[in-house]
Image 1 (cartoon, rainbow, N blue to C red):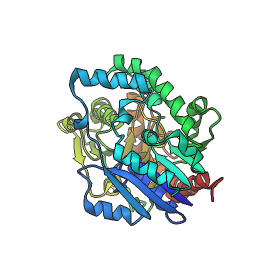
Image 2 (cartoon, rainbow, N blue to C red):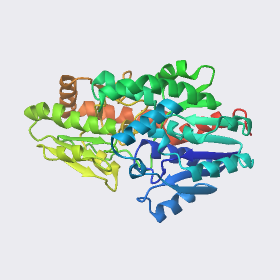
Image 3 (cartoon, rainbow, N blue to C red):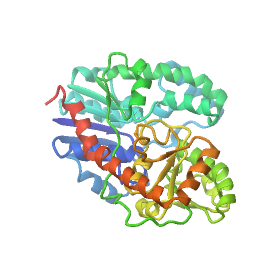
Image 4 (cartoon, rainbow, N blue to C red):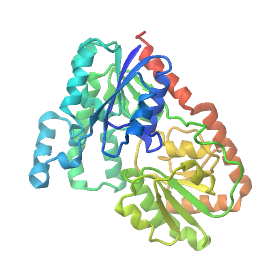
Length: 405
């Protein structure tokens, strides 16, 4: 099968965040059995060595310059113009700003030239590059949604974490309308959890919904050789992503202080690329270390007593949770942080959804090495049995090949 994969996010190296990781490992699997062409965008930060490394995993790699925020009209007039465009076209600015005419023309020519049997959009924002007419040209047009813009905004409003609540309440029904409209262009919708299926079912209508979970590269996240003990916490994630910024602040400002009253030696490591100014400021708090990008996330996981994932917003399976469990680190997480994972029977992680519950659960793990050992072993087994990229790739491949050959 000849597959065209569209990703405005440059999916390499596969250590920078959820979108990059998922896209890279899915294309890596598909390339083993099919002819894969990836069309993507590169920012100024993408090095030639990274382009060459990614190109080795596909039959053809096509890169276009990534638009930047600086390309947008600034000031009040710019905001008014973008909102007016949103009302007129039904497509939100967060999607339209990625639309590069040269990239669109290349995709049109590739599809119209009959060079592909299937198209995948690796995140819903890439739907802007897919024309409804493509359904008549190829056998499968699939969107790997990753997350719902409407659902994420609704979640932020419900949890009080929205940056601009008044604006977001206005945008909410527009985003719902947008998602109902764009899914009609696709033959299949891919999501990561059964909870996502329930959320997207009313939007999808008759369009098939397929669950393809995330996975872990077990070679990149080997099982730890020993329990380090101590009082070390870790949270991992791209530190410029709103859900991770909110989590880091909640963890450092609300959970850590009462925990340090009971355990004065607790240290919290916030590990991840591109920490915002707000995240960097957390490094001034007692016991908080902000690392920025690190050579090996696995090393920081192996050195941690507990991995904490107190996420309040964000949909789907969290790679950070899977990777911690693969590395053998006991996990304490919210329902959001554990979405899509069966962790209660047998016990594979501890749930917490309030400051008091987090302090209690983390304290249990600090005090009970046997409990740490149980969660470590059970968590690793869950990943080995269910959440590998090989399994995810096979599931994705079956979606694409169900009517194509």
